Image (cartoon, rainbow, N blue to C red; front, side, top):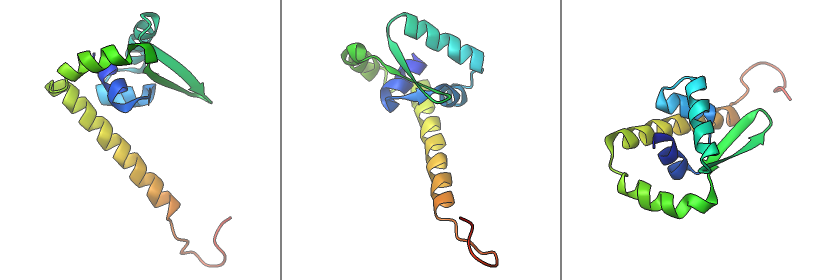
Length: 110
C-alpha cells in the first residue's frame, strides 16, 4: 500500500527514491514492485539506467477511491513528507549547480 500510495501521489518514481522513502533494501523494493507489476497494478518504463514506475492508467480510478480513504494514515503521510523533502533537496542542489558563479582566475570553464 505504501508503494501504491507514493506512486499515486507522485505519478512516477524510481526504485532508488522508493528505497530511501520506505527504508527498504533495493532487493525488497524491487521484489515488491515486481509483485505489483505482475498483479497488473504498476507499469514500468526504462530511461537509460533508470526504471520509472507508475500506476497503470486502468487502475487510477480505483486507486483514487481506495487511497483517497487512506490519505490520513500516519505512515502514508510520513512517506509523502520524506519524498517531498528528498525532492526539494534535489531541486535545491540542481538550482545551486545551475547558478554557480565562477570565482577562479581567468576565463570560466566551458
